[in-house]
Length: 384
Image 1 (tube, rainbow, N blue to C red):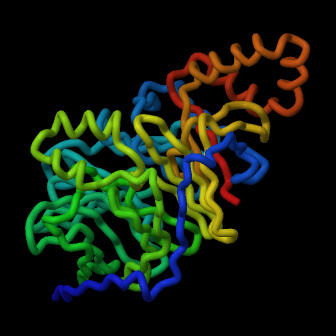
Image 2: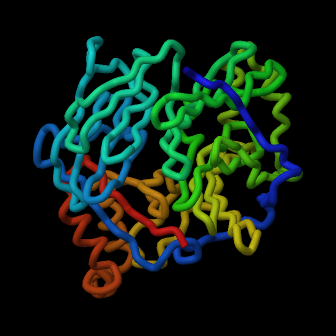
């Protein structure tokens, strides 16, 4: 029996954190302001053909001593590496039969198994951590990407829709014996065509939900979505009605969003108990925003974030949540080697040699090992 219900708490009932974004206060930022003073580098080695990765990896998961990379558009597979970057195996079950998929959107680790979410045909699939198929559960309705929350032992899935009476978010308990629905479709609202893969994010203690065009990030727990953080873009805010008027003109809408749109929440964010990070775009320019949740202070960072920890690589943006508390990005080995050579030319031989033997030793050693590789080097930062 499925018990269907839903609950979203009113913003006035919760302790809201206001993220005020003032572009006039943008400044140069340093990694050490926001992350612990060490960076971990992991080259995902490509010594075997099956280990070669495409440029686009939609999700990278760390679990115990393994790394799972999800390529949902290229090979439609999951490649598995150990924590040192050595290739182990692959989940490649493309097909139309039992134990196979045509598409998938996300993965989650649940009780020592890997659950594949947002699968087409409509189902959830479970694999062993080594990549062996275990079982699957089919659904009547479409279900999209999502997460599993250990905090309340529930699955939460986002599904884009345009049907009155339908909901964007569904939640199931671990045994799939009850269903909760959230965020009903409202034809007056602006939603856009987004996958929702980034909408759910985990910290070490909580699960959060943030949706493109909404100004609120919700804390999720015990079947409730509680408003927790609210963005205030002030005079830099985008009038969403301007975008909504272009719904019937896809090309014009895309041009406006890409080149002329002002600030709105993009749902590309990472979060911990102490800090929120998000990427914003203002008239085509990318902006990094860090919000100190303890001091309730916003840091608007322009240009690349300076690596003052070991001087290796200045990130443009931070993309991945590898696991709660561990975030970062990936850069192909060949590209990092070019950066290293540019750094050598800028420093001069003496200063460069001293840097590579001391402060920049770990970065240099990893880049030299991966210098001929198209596979990425992962740069892992620990959130403060």
